[in-house]
Image 1 (spheres, rainbow, N blue to C red):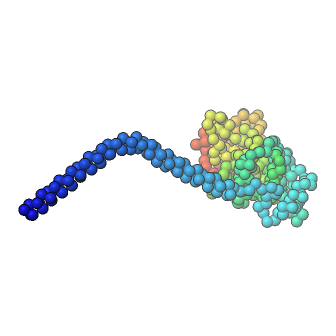
Image 2: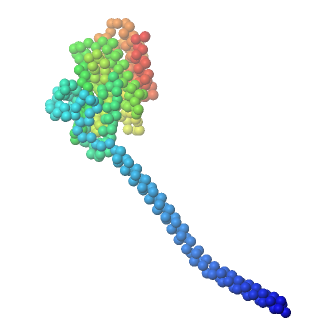
Image 3: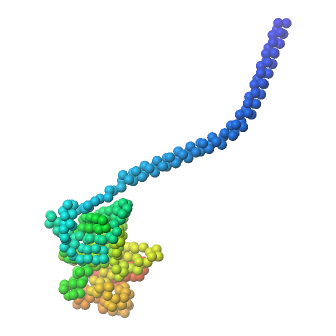
Length: 376
């Protein structure tokens, strides 16, 4: 009986436990049904908050990176230099400033400015080119651009280039300081030849032509970044006492505000077209062709009566007629071997003056052509 009673008690306890468990489960299920709609309504807002947080963090990170980059650029910007900027140890800024403040000796003038000769306190004679820029670049970025380009020009080193030794920018003026060459410009020399004041033999003229094209070869192939002259003409070819040429005004037409380039007779037609054309190294070659023809003929290319208006077409016409000798300067005739060299040089000048830039040789090819002339 006791055992049976105990079993009944156990069975009753199990029943009560199962009943309670069932009730609790029912309550839990009821509670879940009550919370689920609230959770579902809050879920989009939770996801939106997470998305906005991610976007805010990303934008903040990008802004911070941009601010750091701008700060680094600002501290790395070169300062705008004032007063004389000197690239030669022989020139002292104070002595240069004092020399410029005095009245230097005027050597000549052009549309772009004037040329002076002055002697510094230490006895060094320099040539100064004064450029009237018209309007000085007001923005600091423009001033830095001109400053950086002039510093690049000062780094050019070749025996046939005029090295920039110093410069001074004052308002709308640029003072460019170079070595002084007593021989003057090629334009002055050729004018004296036409007036029979001096004699310029073929050997000297060929040396001048080779020196010019070697300077172009250096600018076009040896420099990094590559340089173009932009304004090659006889007045920008300076001569030393041995008739060794040096190119002046290299690249100035590109960087100096309102700088006027050479007259159209020295520049090819493509450099003045507005329909997407570009000034290239072959444009410099055209200018060299005009100078070479000038050396060969002794005539001024600005005289249309001598060439019929187009120097290149005139040379081609003479070659086609077998009368290229008529183009040569009569002062150079007499030596048969030299005449053969000059006739080959006429062909070189004619191809340099081709209307199509693709038909013109490179400066690298021209060095080989001209230096081998004496082998013909």
